[in-house]
Image (cartoon, rainbow, N blue to C red; front, side, top):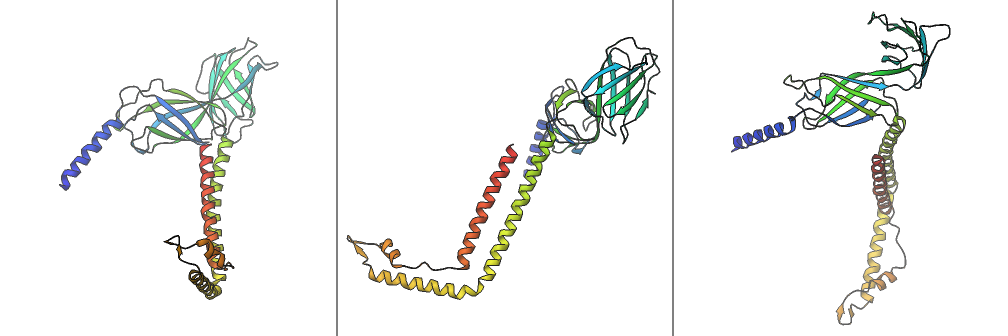
Length: 335
C-alpha cells in the first residue's frame, strides 16, 4: 500500500509539472514590477520549463535618457553639443543614436569619473558616422562627426544599458523571473526590457510575442522610506516587548516581599465575604440566590493586591501594544 501511494503521488506531481511548466505559444509579459532600485520582478504569460534559481539568459534593460536639445558647436562644422535632462551615471554602458540632422551612432561605457570622459568609435569605419564623444560634465556631451554637418537642428536617442547581475526563477510553479541589475534604477524613468536569448532546460529557445516591453520606475526614494518605516516599526515592536517584559520582571522581583501580605489581604477578604454570606438571607421570593450588590456593599475596602495587579496591567499593555503595531504594519504594507 505504501508503494501504491508513492506511485500515485509521483503521477500527480508529473501531471502538475505538465500543467504548470508547459506553454502553448509565444510568451508574453503580464507584469513588470520594480521591487527596489536594483531588483526587477517579471511575470510571464505562461510558465516555461526553466532552471530553478539562477538561470543563464541574455536579457537587456535600457533606460531612455531624457534629452534637452542638441546644437552645432560654434566654429566647428563637425561638432554638436548635446544637453541631457538626466545626469550620466558612472560605470554605465550607453548607446547614442543620431535620429535627425546627422547620421551615425556610438556605444560607450563611462568610467568611475564621468566628467571629461572620452571615447572613440572604434566599432565603425564608415565615413558618415560619429567619430568620437567627449563628456564635458554629467549633463553635456560633445559629439564629433566624421562628416561636415549642414543642418541646424538635431535629434538624438540616448539609451543607458543596465548591467544584468543575476537572473533567477525562485519558484518552480510560478512564472516569475527576478532580475538583479547594476547600477541602480533611476526614479520615475522610462525603461525598456528586451529578451534576446533564453532557453528552457531541454535547450529549446523561448519565443516571445514581441520581446520588447516598456516599464516606468516609481519614486524609489519614497519606496525606500516606506521599507525603512516598516523595518523601524518591526524593531520598535520587538524593543517595546523586551522593555515591557523587563518592567514586569522588575515589578515582580521588587514585590516578592509583599507576597505574604498579599495572601493575608486575600484571606481577610474571604473572611468578610463569608460574614456577608451569613448576614444576607439566601431566600428571596422562594428562590435561593445571593444579592451580589449587598455582598459588594459589605466589602468597604478595596484590597491592594500588589505585584499581582501590576502583572495584569503590564500583560494588558503588552497585548494592546502588539495589536496596535500589527495594525500599523498592515497599513504600511497596504501603501
